[in-house]
Image (cartoon, rainbow, N blue to C red; front, side, top):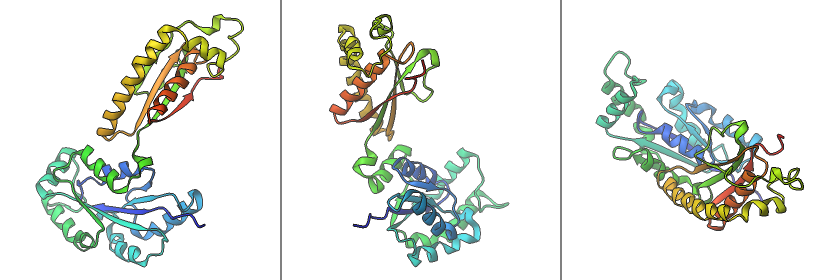
Length: 288
């Protein structure tokens, strides 16, 4: 049975209406994203992705008036239907006053204003985009949407249960090697007895059952787990509400070999048992 080709989403619309936000959210949803792509190159990008990642990889390309004369070919390229992928044309728009405020806040000129006013550039852009706007599959008016609301709309339109779920990475580390820079939360396991000082456990790691039992069976470890994991579950719900779909929890001990490894495995397992997509990773295991 032939695999189903991934979706191709062409993102366009008014400057300041949220194209970059939409592109970032599509990337978080697993799309291969290319920004400011001349429409004539859409087929080339699809071919390259097909060859390197397979036809199931969804693709999103952002096309706007910065493409100059190339922008005129957008409709022709889309209607030729030569990509072999289901294609959705997404248009983002907002009222002129909102777009002006956003552009002024960003302190960037409009690409079509030239020596004129910002509003003149917006009016020219609407003229250029008028035909494309009328032929779009999905139109989102971002006038009254904040960043989180826009990402929610994109996720609802293009996400799947798998891509919109929160993904948690629980990573063990050794403090002597430094705290992971991408950690959202950091917990210190150095309050637990160190298996390093038990001769028969010293050469083993927190992934070995005897070491894991030595660490986790301590009453203080159980109290920590019983209080910390529910806190992470609560935060996970808030992250999803705010449009954040990735969370990194760093669990540290002295060398990242025993205590942090055992507790990382247990925290990830408890999160999975509560329906949260989580995985354990061990940054410093094997460095000693």
